[in-house]
Length: 116
Length: 145
Image (tube, rainbow over all chains, first blue to last red; front, top):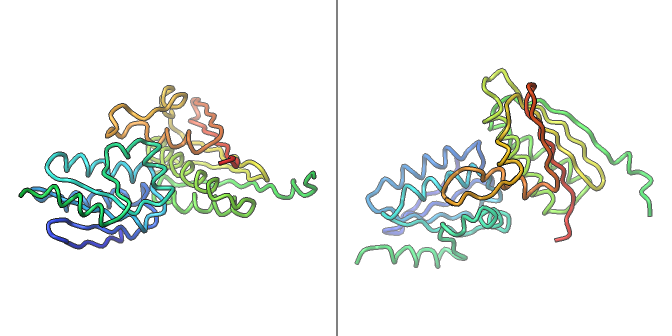
């Protein structure tokens, strides 16, 4: 799976470089992200700009990661194209994920989760 | 004006899939390419891609119990509608998931999400289950959106 990882302390930024997230690669994505969030207080920014297609397996992988983060941290998404956004709306997952228009907005919000 | 070449615009194919979810991408995108030859509606192409992806993945994951089993797909692409018939050896989803799929009240539950997407994507969904397996027929056509 093609993923770029960087750090903008204290936020880990993940840029998915896959056009399609489906049952063929969702398990790899889930494992990768679960590995990252083993930190005590994970703050995860997920850039989906390169993703043109995501199915229920891909959405399920993100849900698993969100549940694992729970109240201990936060995850913000940005870069959703029209089709990907439509699936978040259809499945009502937009209600449980923090989805932002821009990376800047997401990082600002994630910064608020940092303890003073 | 009536289309004098409509019959020649119809394409019918059948495919046998080994139970490997990694193959779904290739098959779904090939179907979309075939439909794209008769329609440039991006919404229709997206719905076919996601609807077939969900249906084929379900058939492989839930319908095939052993590597020797397989999923068959017969599809017919016409000028105005596109029909995909998927058969697997399993028993299919439960009746409730098929007739009235709803997003689970617990949004973080993984149940039913695929069925919800299939019913949104396809314009008509029909199915039957028998001792020979489960049959799902999806029909897609362009929508005024």
